[in-house]
Image (cartoon, rainbow, N blue to C red; front, side, top):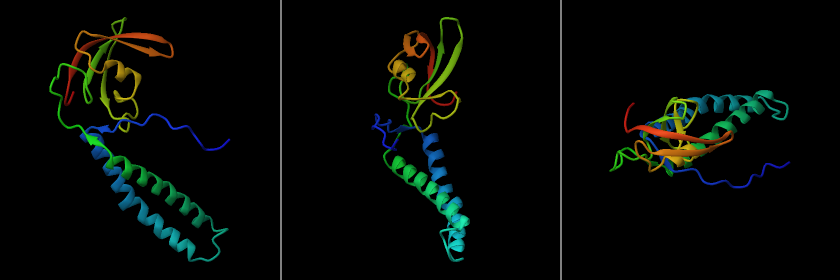
Length: 167
């Protein structure tokens, strides 16, 4: 099977200031801290002669390719980003960057923040603006109902609270 994959829907180009800072710090760390020592070790391994059987050289080149791939991705991604650093004109509606407290039919409360796809990592309550739940919440107000289709069936969630800024 080849590596070709069909092109997916492009990810949103929005990011919060915190997310931009984090990605930019990763880019600077890769470029200034991680790449130079690996480059030096590859140069030293190359100076030893036959490169075809030199494990240090082969492994170092592989590491460099991985770092360079990530650097290229971050550079391109950060260049095209729009940093959303102000709350919307209508803070009573759910838009990008909003914190939303949801309640399900059982009374269970969940809190999420709508962020860019590059920020929604792990389970910190951050969800991508491209996620089905976020799409269902966009434009809603407090006491509105959002219906989301999940693998286990449709979920009905009620919006209890919306706020922007720090929780």
